[in-house]
Amino acid sequence: MSTTTEKKDVAKPQVTAPAVSEKNIADLVLDRINAFQEAGQLKLPGDYHAGNALKGAFLILRETKDRNGKPVLESCTKESIAFALQKMIVLGLNPIKKQCDFIAYGDQLQCSPEYTANEMLAKRYGMKEIHKKEVYKDDDFEDGVDEQGRTIVIRHKPCSLDKRSKENIIGVYATVLMEDGTRYSEVMTMEQVRDAWNQGATKGQSPAHKNFPGEMAKKSVSNRITKGIIRSSDDAALFADDEIKDKTGDAVANLNTAKASATSAAEVIQFEETTINPETKKEEKPQQFTAEEIAEIEREEAELAKQQSGKQTKANF
Image (cartoon, rainbow, N blue to C red; front, side):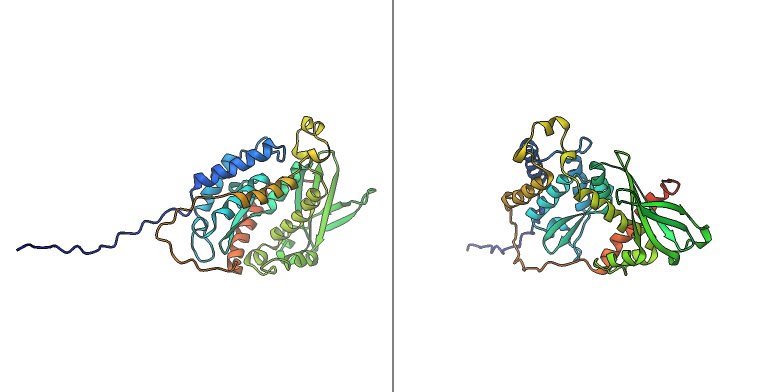
């Protein structure tokens, strides 16, 4: 009599594959950046190391989650991750220095530059220094216009410390010193600042805006003056002098060209899909951060800005 042993199918434990291969993406992004540089389409700052920036970015991405609490390296597409990293490098940003944030909108990862990034980019276009100050209602403050029509701060004598409450802030200004010695300012009333806040997701109602209005106002005026510098400048600052002499007409590829190339490059980046135990993927609509999540980000920015401004309180123009 033979005995047969029935073998029951035992469900094998599912193995979860990493959502992305960090090395694969890093290599592809660096290859594209190198191609831009070799083609003369991009000139990175001498003190900027793309490889180090990528390492720092992945350190942050490993801890970054989408609004559903899922790691963005799992929930976002590989193509969007690659493009976000390319944008970071093209702009010469370092996420470790809080110059940009990575934010997931549905399954799309985006690189969002911070105001500190605008200050850094403005320095590439000739800005040497920037100082930001609140104006309180009891301050002795006067602004004006120079012979070239630029706004300048003529006089600012701060009031006593006991009168410097957040309720007494009536305005804010930023003064920049350019490498050629030019000095000028951007002045905003709190009404203008609040109008700018109203363009944002939280409409100026986040805890950061309510608790640190001075710091958030300085962020707004900093963005206004630095963006003006960036937008009014050509891309010559991104190239060495000898490179400029060798480039004429269409041969001079600027940063905007590099950005466009990065966009098209993101479309041609191909990844080998490794699917283990695939699940039915539900189509998701792009999702925005909630006001609470945005407020948390802005609160961190405000605290950073407060630390930075503390080092500049004795700077005079």
